Length: 243
Image: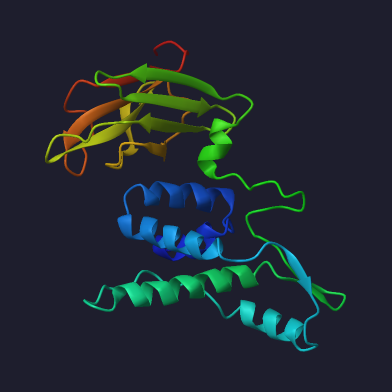
């Protein structure tokens, strides 16, 4: 899908495949509007009752199946002063209903509404970051910063992914950003994305963590850099040795 913003509805109800979910979570780190959209959708989702079974009218099955192919989430709208809160609420509910329609089970004269973020055993579907953190081969390296902040990088070779978790991280200096890096053999430090400003974060790094020897954080000019312009404030050794 070319418009990554349009994935917010499917992401909110865990209807993306692994690749789409990983790409959208990277997008979320840099798109405040999509983060607000997802939060709004999940708030609406929390109002849906737990799994119930009801007897539907006879024509419901055909109507639902016919409508699924015609429903798609819309990209974020251009804000209009005075109307954005109401429009966002209406659009959020519309996306949620559209995504929920895709998980309606119709058959045998009964419609079973299931929470799309749960499987038949009521086990929560894991996000891309959670899968890394819970992987059987996950390895973590933690660092403490002056002032009480801390950061942990967890990488999984089987998933080729790494996740940064921060706690009480102070904001970067004005006009600067925290940038993430993966040290790749033969290439050096390769950008792995920018960190959001919030102090507590769970960030999925871009790039192949299975080949990297370490991860790093630097302070860069706003917008980031193609290569580090300052010494790293943190390095997380993956235990492979340097190439």
